[in-house]
Image (tube, rainbow, N blue to C red; front, side):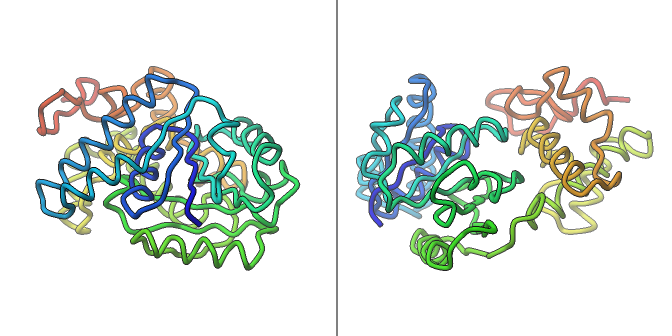
Length: 296
């Protein structure tokens, strides 16, 4: 494999493109929005500059990484020579099914189709194609350039050849692949999201405050980030979407999203991406400031 296409240039998409390009792969980064692509390239360059400052990359690697990335707004042009496509679009079943249906029509027969979905069934996504044996999940963690894990999700139809290829490819870009089967939330979010939801319930029911909840988990459980700050970092809309998948998939009330989370998403308080969630995020400030909604 040498030609990788990444669909979607948001936080996950640009991080995935960065990792492949830094490891010598030719990357086509596709998004329907030209401004989003420009922002993605700026983000990748800024992240490379941080790596350069820390001494984890050289100026030569930085230049090579940027040269390895080409941007496209046309899906057809972006996928014409792809050996692997990694879809990193919105966490929405309808959107992903439509993308995979189109990819199946546009891509060479050799192309493996992977999704970075954090919760949606790969078996269902694969059913939108005529090559279900070549469909698989590659769930990267955020921030992608730093986090080692790739949760490799084997759909019911994924072939052993496809699975082994993706496991080996993940290793070649410096990641640690962990194979899981295709059930709601897979492993990472089936465990993580109920913890975040319970933290939100703890706040909602008045048992403790934002800083206190996060401090207990950081100081008592050695978590690098408290669950409420982590929810902000992931995006409260994404957390809600995953919890709905878990709730619908298992039919268990323990996965029901907290009403506070639902209200915050409806109010567009989405965390870091909207500059306010459980905390407020001020440009240029590293200080964590509790949102006015939760101050005593």
